[in-house]
Image (cartoon, rainbow, N blue to C red):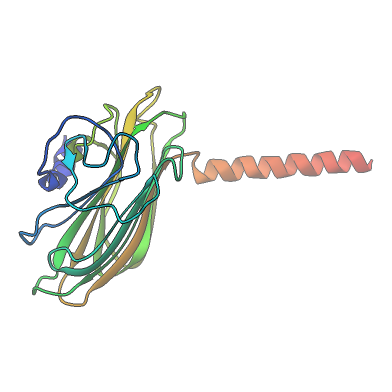
Length: 240
């Protein structure tokens, strides 16, 4: 219940509701100003460019590749912003990446930029979910959540939280694993929601966040070690 209420705080970004037509979506908003949402939809995705789920694009995608969505420009008190989201078919399967750089320029409080990346139509591969965020900031960066919606939707408040970490400072790195919430599901969506909180003019933040359904790093290491041991054993037997 607490998780759902917490995730619902990101729903303030929602301004448009349309018929379902899923695609990769990037949403940005400085919630301390009246600037409004910037909504970018992957314009190379099959099925069209103008709407996706209940999202309707407000600006054009500046990246011409399928599975990549980008925005460059000012948003509210953030005078410089470069943000890119990546998903299938560019990477994958079941993996999304969000990279962003922001500089605040106006206003005494600097602003709070909310950023969401959402993609749908994932298919369960049996692994757990893994979330990671790294970067630098002169104030704070929040991983509001990385999450899964087993109904394959795009509403920010409908995602089940896999990981969250608030108040990341300076040079930061955070990662977490979560259970397979999409077990046996042939259609689910994945999302990363982040916030950049600046305190004044000329604050700078940059981060890279990833969310994927893959074997845990420790599991990969164990299997790699076992594989190396097996290879050594085969080599020794051949020499004998």
